[in-house]
Length: 459
Ligand SMILES: *Cc1c(COP(=O)(O)O)cnc(C)c1O
Image (cartoon, rainbow, N blue to C red; front, side, top):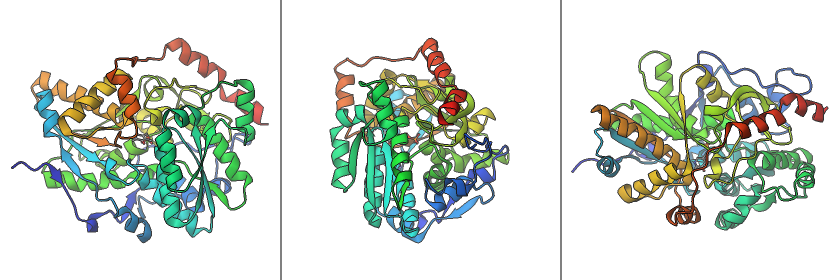
């Protein structure tokens, strides 16, 4: 029998996260205070984030950071996650490529998001924080943080993008089941929410707006901090358990990836999978290609600009040097809610600029074609976000077939799609549109959101 799953015992759960900031050839540019234009210090971030997360955010010196024992203990509820050889998919594609995937869908929250949620809840508890606030798009991050805060006895308030609140009622139920309070965003409970509802009463919400609301609540409530599930450096750091495990598991399989693929929202699952492998490219030891798969409806990596921009709609965050579509960007209501964010993490943005990785954009019909083929060949229904990674993997596997060469392709299955079956219904009934955003529309958002305008508003 051929080996299908490459498994490791709990004792092999990594003891340290990998901080790529310490080793990347060009460090990310500093985050800037929008008023003073000075580089932000960790202390500047303390009113918003837990201290340890703020310190990790700006740490460019320590390549390895210890994972607290209590976090490792909770990781053991679902880690080490399986690395699987996708023989079924290879056969369906009739490709000489060897396809592997890391299955992050086995976590209690159904996605990779718990890897950072547990760490952030732990650091909050350690610091004596009693309340965490956050935003959620599709509901994956909200679900993960709700469970993680429950593990540490912290109250959790979640602003959920309105369109998802209405389209994905079960994700809301999951958060409430874990004990969180869930509010649809934009809401009238914050100034940021009120402002946008006044301007556009029918606005269906975006991650950018929900982030503004959550930050506002965190900074106006005692003993409360804000937790973010993607984009930021410390989130990517926590996600490196994925790639560190995968590196050992590929060794068990006796192969090394030529291509590493992950879907891309703000970059956390991509970073988590890619960075531990990328460190070997820095030293010239390997020449692995890294591909981020983003939705054609929200193409910040392939069509965005590298510039300083806010991480949220209202402009409460520091200015981030990143690939962005503009913080006023209103993504269309595609089904992969977790990928509807206007910007990319600053580390990934620098790495893309420096040519250490590539990006592709994929429309939602191609992504669901891929997801359904995967479901039918591997027996797992992927999250709509993860379908983008599968589609990019399939493109590469088919290239191998045309060229008659075999390559090892490793992709991250970031989550399962059991709570996203309404999206699959839409696809299966033939209603789904292959949405591409036009250059004109992109230009419109960009010119509306020039940071100078945002700066005036704030001052
Ligand atoms: C949130 C989410 C994503 C996108 O977020 P990243 O930070 O880019 O990883 C991808 N897949 C799933 C299943 C998600 O929940």
